[in-house]
Length: 331
Image 1 (cartoon, helix red, strand yellow):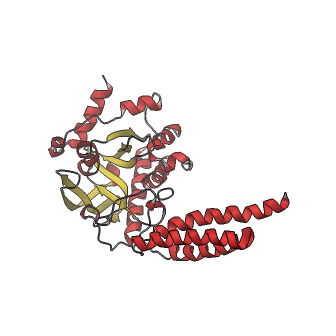
Image 2 (spheres, one colour):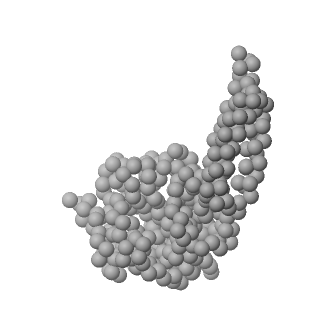
Image 3 (spheres, rainbow, N blue to C red):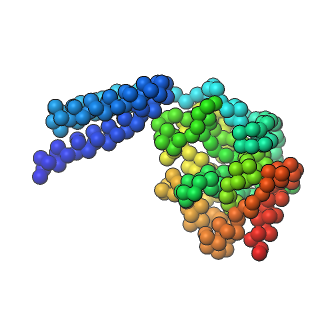
């Protein structure tokens, strides 16, 4: 029995490493796709030969050496801010602060005709942190699969002014997002800070996604700390870019980290963190959603009703959609 275990452990370890290395090699960003896929298939075939010819222990050792070499190449990839980005993600926010006054350069305001046909402006906005009144956690359900969603934060200032924050994959021109590729250093991470008519309107009025806007229980001081942490993180990414990771460095993991500012204890890591569509369950269980009923009741109460693309011409769009939420939930 001991001999079987002794042989089985290296086999399991090398198998896990082999699965990871095949994926890493097939998606290696600096290699042409055809070459990377061919190399991954060849490596998988070679591993099979090594196991067959060298037996378990020596074959597993040889495979581990090969995986280590692939790992070296994989971790040599560095994130960058100077790629040929999509125009709506061509620049990142620049933050300056003087006391309670913060200035956000590259504040995004896009006007959409369709999801792919738009005009984008990059503005400079100045806010007083003392004017912050609240924050909402937004869950954007763009897929029929329940765990699949995008999450955002929206900060409310006095005078019904809103600043939306979306943590996203920064896309190069001609590239589309894949959760699998997101595990293998294929995308950079970025913070988009902008107008709600842009970030929320795109998803609600143009793409017709189903969206919940959950108000978060927080004092003005807690809201300020959360907002400042967002700005600091955005500024860090401007100078030190990072890779997006579907499981560990995504929209949901980053935003829940910012919500730590409204809690005494840190938000715990759960599977719900890796599945944004279920993240509102975690936020609800932590007592952060400002509601009286169950989560199912909160989902109905704070679901954004259907809005048209024509509504995006309204200067009071944020106030307009929240009034619609209140009217729908009162029925």
